[in-house]
Amino acid sequence: MTQSTTQPSTQPTTAPTPSQTTPDISGSAMLELGDIHSYYDHIHALKGITLKAYEGEIVALIGGNGAGKTTTLRTISGMMKPRTGTLTYLGEDIAGKPAHKTMQMGMSHVPEGRRIFPQLSVRENLEVGAYTITDRKLIEERVQEGFAYFPRLKERENQLGGTMSGGEQQMLAIARALMVNPRLLLLDEPSMGLSPLFVEAIFDIIVKLNKDHNTTVLLVEQNANMALAIAHRAYVLQTGEMKLSGKASDIAKDESVRKAYLGDE
Ligand code: ATP
Image (cartoon, rainbow, N blue to C red; front, side, top):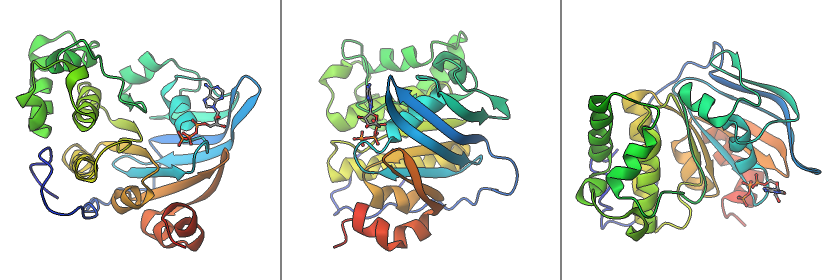
């Protein structure tokens, strides 16, 4: 685990250090999806998804294009409502609860494509992320904590978000999601479009967050190699159905997964 993670090293990209934490997965799950079906009008995107995340886990959700990964995160955070199935978070039924409510319950969703505010400065973007917090001192503490995780953002505190590089914008999107000190972080393709060194930096941060704050992370990734390297457990989605689940290290060894998602012939 590197400590200074925002200045990508000049060394060749290596797999990130796996998380060293060992979450307790014997009790009740923090997040539980049971036989979830979600639709876009008549398009049946999720066809009976079952998934659990326990407190302190990094859970990877991998799969090809159109498998339903983004839809799964959108359904969990309340951006869309499942048609049938059960969805519980911290023991509460949250199926169809709007996103601002799940956020108040400690869930933060970093959607695909970053979605930062391009006309606002780095600091302003962070402050917007804390819109549910009224205590100025606490907001400032969280801003400083974000800068400690991402020194690159501190250097660019007054720069407009839209003028930052892709990797910097991804850091900003994650730092903004951390402003509410989430218990559950939903990350949608954080490595998309980034250079290998930035990818490594982002994955190191995810591991550090999980270790430092016991933050539970549900990580959607097409970069299956990297995701499986840092996750405790993983799920494999295929055309809206859950094909496989288990320890990330076992999933990484699975022959069908290696062929389909890890670049093996
Ligand atoms: P990718 O890795 O390509 O982003 P994904 O695994 O995240 O894919 P989703 O974006 O969840 O997949 O899409 C699941 C299915 O739902 C796909 O068949 C997709 O075409 C469909 N879909 C997604 N968004 C919409 C939408 N807004 N309207 C209609 N269909 C949609």
